[in-house]
Length: 290
Image 1 (cartoon, rainbow, N blue to C red):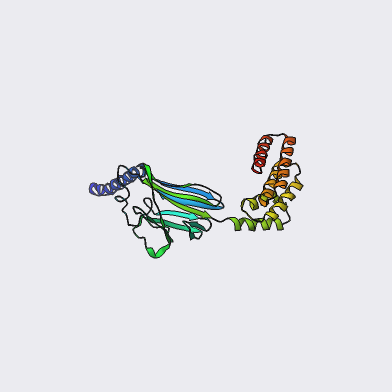
Image 2: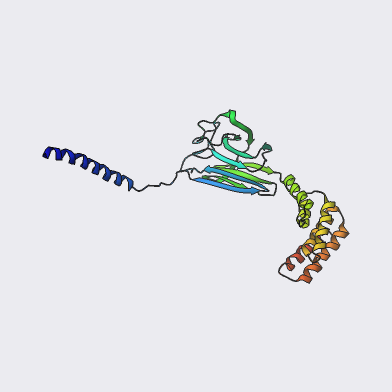
């Protein structure tokens, strides 16, 4: 009988031991270590185009980068870990090369005096190990610029922002590779203006006139809209100045001068927080007419 009891106890002890071990494993805290090459996301709107860049940022850490860690003449993931991924919400041009809206893998082939930039249709590759040139959308050349001081961490950033352009910079060690980005939002905005003007709601006369002026479009139409905006708001000194600028662009100096003086008179009459600035802006504008 004792032998039977011992045989029963033994499996019970085993089960208890397993349960205790499982409990101890379950209580083991998760250890999170810092990434050697932290992930980063850069978002930038250029005109009406949203650009998102997802990449990892390796550091120099005392190493020689280009020509050593990153060999010349070989495809580089342009960062660390997964290949750099870039998304454009609309079609763009980079260094004059057309790229449709979409998400792409960004690869480069560094060189001492020239880089090859590659936009690949496969945006989900780890590193460049399975990179296949058959998936290339476009390739184009870029010229690196030597920096006076080294940059420790690989950086992708946007600079020189304009309504229609920006510079996408790839920076590491003493190398900066600028990529000229161009966007064309005019057709999109024109479609929106046409729809708004044809609709039944309030018309965007002022903003449409300003857009036509800034974009070098039909100045006659811009002046018609500026007149309509000023008719709706006769005391609006900012609209009088907008009208003056359109007239000046048309070559009507006398009309522009009269409209600018009207803007000054309206601003002085309104006498609010904006008036001093608009008086100064109008006076500065008049000086450009002389």
